[in-house]
Length: 243
View: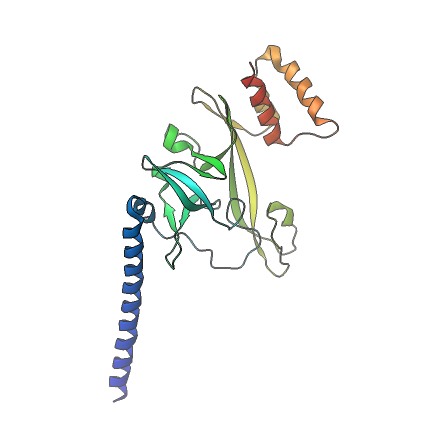
């Protein structure tokens, strides 16, 4: 009798599980059908969940999804909610209505806009280009690009608080934190991609006969402190644009 009861109970649990899964699939099917052409965006795999408590954020700047646009598989989609998981370099579309957020397969993403413009250099220039998503921080004949990456690290004493670049609350009782790294490059009008790690890399893009003039102009803006690398890159790009 006891074994029979257990079998009946297990069968009921399984039926409920199957029914729940079927209902979720039905909800997604209804959503996908209602999305029309945009349904292509919602066929990717479920976005990764960091199932732990941590400081900082794995997202580019904030966990908040914002309205944006994306060129995906050659088509332009507008008014969709997007965010970038900078730890995994995933572009994620928020669906809502109880449906899981989906990752847009990077190999089909040309670019997106989430307040700022982001390029997928490997889509545009091939596998030899730097991977991930690159924010356009200066858009001219020569573009200045930035890729933000996040890394989950241990922080038992709170010493990595400033490495998060995140304005949210930093909780002292959490010992995992996402730290921030920014990489820069120049995308030249002929398609060459020049990694930038220090000022010297940027200055080499300027003709030798003009470097003194560039240094003088930058010193005029710096005053007593050095410009951050992103601002320095932008000023050099603006100078090249004017020539």
